Length: 339
Image (tube, rainbow, N blue to C red; front, side):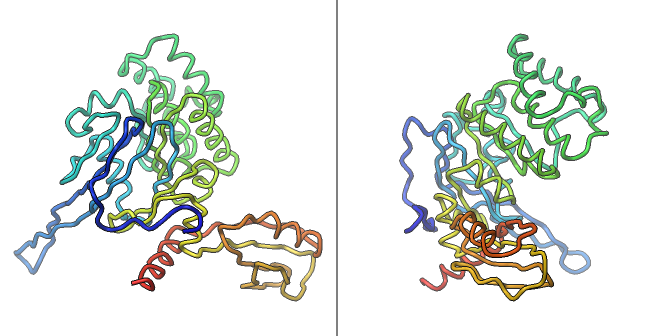
C-alpha cells in the first residue's frame, strides 16, 4: 500500500517481540461489566469490550501517535499500560514489566499526562508540587534542579511557580503537568491530549520541547490527541484505534491515503473573485472574498499556496486539518468496499 501503512487484521497470530521492543501488547483485551436499569426494579448487566484484542509493539526511543474518536479505547489502553487497569486478556509488558502486577516498580520508569486530569496538588503553588515529586521519586538533588530548570525554561513556567495550581489556566496547568511528569527522567512518556487548551505559541513550545526530549534523551513517547498537527509534527508513525480494535498502523501520510482525507485551504483575497482554479484542489465554498479549497491531505500545501499567491491578490490564508472522525469514517467505507 502507498504510504507504507495498512489496515490491521482483526485476528492476528501471536506477535513475536524482540529485545528492542519497549512497549509490547499481544491480543490485549479489556471488558467492563455495565449495569443499566430495566423497568422500575430490575437491572440488566451487559459487557462492554473497550479494548478488543489489540497487538502492537513500540521500540525504545520511538514517538508514536495513538489516535481515534472519543470512546475508541485510547485512554483505556493507556491506563492498562500504566497499571491503573488490569487487562481482561492477552499479554502486556512495558520495559519487560507487567504493569498491573508491578505498578510501583514501573512508576519510576514512566511519566503520564492526562489532559483533563492533573497530577499536581490543587491548593499548593506549582513549585511545592514539584518538591513533592522530588521526594516521592527520590530524585537526586542535582538532577532534580537540572531537570526543573530545563522544564521551567523551555515550558515558560518561571512566573507560575508561586501560583497555586487551582489558579492556573488549563493551558498553564498542562505545561505544569508535563514538567512534573519529566522530573524523574522517565524512560517512557504517555501523553493524553497534551496540547488541549493551549494557544498557538504554547503548542509550538510544547511540541519543540517533546521533540528535543526524544532526540536528546531517547524518551519513548506514546501520544494520544485529536490534533493531527501534533501527530504530523512529532510522530513518524501513527496507530488508529476504533471500537477497541487497531485499524491502522503506519505513517500519517499512509493514513490519509487509506482514508482519502482532505485538508482545507482557507483563502482570503482582497476582493470577491470567481472560484480559484488550481490543479490538485477544488473550491468547496465561496463567501465574498473568502474561498475554501479542498486538497488531498497526503500532499504538501506548499505548492498550492505558492501557485495561489503568485496568481491571485492574496491577503491571508490558513490550512485546516481533517478531523480524526472523518478520516476513520472514510477508512470504514473503504474497508466495506473491499469486503
